[in-house]
Image (cartoon, rainbow, N blue to C red; front, side, top):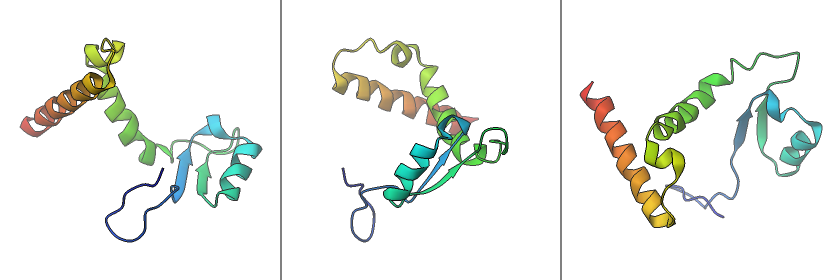
Length: 101
């Protein structure tokens, strides 16, 4: 689906993709080229994936913080609305803790 942006037309695909060695396959690189998405994928046995960590670490850290909430980790809620409400509460609590420290 289109991605909302502040200015200009809605984008339908990301501009670039950063991935680790788990995505080092020729058919994936070709698929990204066909869709005109620039990619930065570490190569197995050649390149270290530590340089990619600068971009990916923020997302993985945030998911880890959210997984620390037991209710979100196990997905007790059946309705998606309730689950999303608890995600919002968890994000607010995590932000509050980060701001007070």
